[in-house]
Amino acid sequence: MSAVTELPPATPTAPGGRSGPAAANKARFSTAWLWSTPPILLLAAAFLYPLYLVVKQAIEGSPPDPANPFKVTTSFSDTLKDPGTRTVVKNTIEMAVYSTAGCLVLGFLLALIIAFVPFPGARAVSRFVDVFLSFPSFLITVSIMFLYGRVGMVNHIASSLTGGKHDTPIDFIEYSPWGIWLAELIYFTPFVMRPLLTAFSQLDSGQLEVAASLGARPGRVIRQVILPEALPALFAGGSLVLMLTMNEYGIVSFTGAKYQTLPVLIENFAKEQTNYAGACALAVINVVLSLALFAGYRVLLARMSGGRRAAVHA
Image (cartoon, rainbow, N blue to C red; front, side):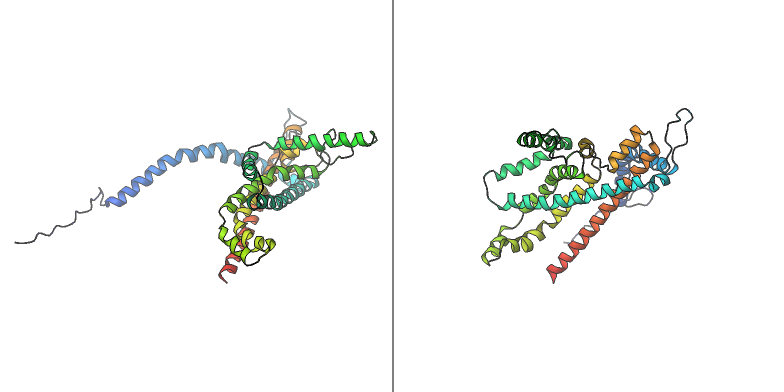
């Protein structure tokens, strides 16, 4: 009785000599392009083309308008050479860096307390952090002005205690950068706390128990156990806060402080001075600064992460 050997079925060949898998891959590629092209075109029309017009307006400037003799025609080079612009750029960078640094320190301490210090209502406080993220920035500014503004509660109490001799004993909210910094510190700290609380909830409790059993003090446990595990979340929250504070408009504008940043100056150029070329130039500067700071932040994160991995493997 002879055995019959069955051969495997031949791979179907597509027209033109192409194999079946290759033809299927080509069909999937064509389908992917068919579905992705409309969103790409929509994105280009809604964002990339207006961005191109802003950059073009910033570089070329706007020609004089005979019908509007009051129209300002500042060029990009004039905007860069203006001492006031350089001062505003310096203010924007300083406020973003100082606010981010304060949010990192305060956010880490508060997240550490909520996650590892047992107290009644810790879970409710953690949930409130999630709710706080949905608040508008001007709401925090209004609350601070209600307490510390020129006609706020603290000034009213101080005026009553001094017999009305000082109308505004506390006046740092509306006429100094400290009010902006305080408002940004309060508003943006939860953006650092949220990823930290998530990282702390995933931390292996066995490491903490081993460190405690070996007699390690709380400070050493934080430095050698908790902080290395929290660094990615800390840097993620810090990068987000850096971008948000760099482009924050509501807090700076609402306080009425004599401390301008780029978003406020852009609005001033566009609406009050009708200097659209200058506003476009400032917008380009703001975008470049944001990308530069973010890139520097990512490089610092990569270097610190690389040093941490080298220390672990050593």
